[in-house]
Image (tube, rainbow, N blue to C red; front, side, top):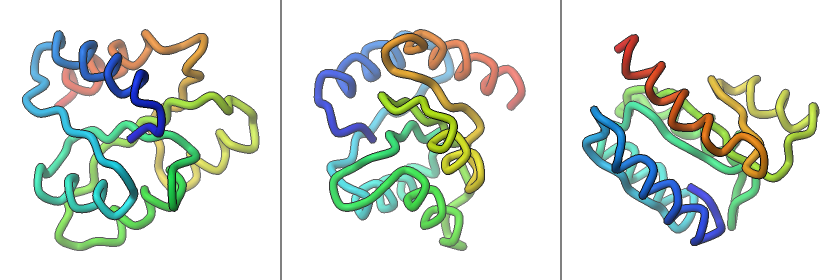
Length: 118
């Protein structure tokens, strides 16, 4: 989930070109994201740190706390690549933390790594 439509569109395009990606969904807020992850049984969830009505770290905690949702791999894609934000995302379980402006292409690389190990 990202608050910028252009980033979401770019992600959808990139992800749809990858093998083993079966579903790509977007959520307009944290509650919709938890619902979508639960329905899709998502293997990977890409989040931003700041979201309307919530945060990436809070969303990770909410998903992990729901016993009906298998825990996905979390990937953070952000404009806030600062150490304190990295820590705030890695602590609740982000496996990857990327700066949107300099590491966007690493998302595809990370997903290939994830799919190779699953």
